[in-house]
Image 1 (spheres, one colour):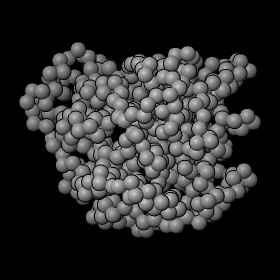
Image 2 (cartoon, helix red, strand yellow):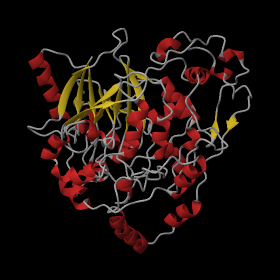
Image 3 (cartoon, rainbow, N blue to C red):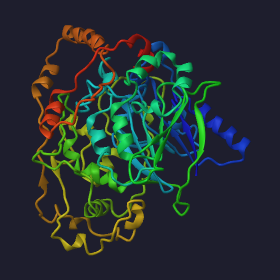
Image 4 (cartoon, one colour):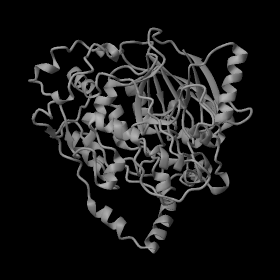
Length: 508
């Protein structure tokens, strides 16, 4: 399978597709998939453009709106993650992923899909330690502060990705995994980005959560962008297989004479159709961690070893079978994009929350909450309640066979027409009620009572906050579960950045 990898798209879809067409003609090849590693900029109108965290003089509509309205159709299936320059109001409608235009699919805050037998995982945004442990509290219309915090990576998505145990082929992130540069040609990197030398020497360049995911997931490939340069590395992994490694590749932004696009020939199962499929293990993780979803600005501590609730959410075969039944035995991602004429055009009045039908359909089917409805106070299901399979119910095991983690379609024999009313909850079985995260609601009340002067003062304080360290170095000995929980509640320590002014343009 031939995959085209794009660094930062920056709204230049037309130019990217034209470049791919030239590569196909020149090499007499057919590219099957395009992957974009952030800063995609899915702007439909002026309103979307105003939600993008860039200086006004750098705001450009780009060409995405042509693909949204149907004026043009993406010639290649395109998968992308979010970066730190996005139409955040639109992407926030699709927290679990979805079609932003025909043939263009967004992975969500974090997501896993299958394409032609390839398992593709991704996480959107960039890492900022001071927002990492919060919920996704931002909602449109955004302030200048939330316009930036909305794309910061949160601990919930990283926690969910860490529950994955089946092999991952491709992983995507916008910022680089921390210390990945140690496995490549640092001297060559510094020739084009010499201002990164101090952070490289201090081993603070890159995302700590992505570093953790890199060595947990151990994907065959990891693609990234953000720093606007091309860089490759070969990362070895410890384990029984001495040859196990991850091929890391970061690419530039879409500009003339820049290395923003590369085509790779990736081995895959040729018996699999080239179509997007939901990942069963990931769907199960979303379902059984639904109670961890938070839209509060307070800290969102997550379960850890030693706590009095479930902390390992790697789904069992029985749990995956249960989710497959909830999906009607069909894991194919529906082509359910709908064009909204009110969202197209040059100018439209600023508005607030918008519920996307794709998210609503997935949440209803999977039994999880749409964060946007949690803002409204009308979640699709009771927060903190998880529907679980009844292990005493033989209907969950009669047809269950061993699950091949590399091929979740081994479940295809399931009768998709089985009555959903047979689910444990609808038959009166007792659902497992997990305690919701503990929040301090006083902070939320303070937000509602702020005056304009308070907001102005907060924006000034935010400037000083952004001068703090982009990353946290944690080289202390292993801590106990109690200490880990205390750390999660109090938040990580922050260190003052010494090169903030240099690196700022590459960050926010």
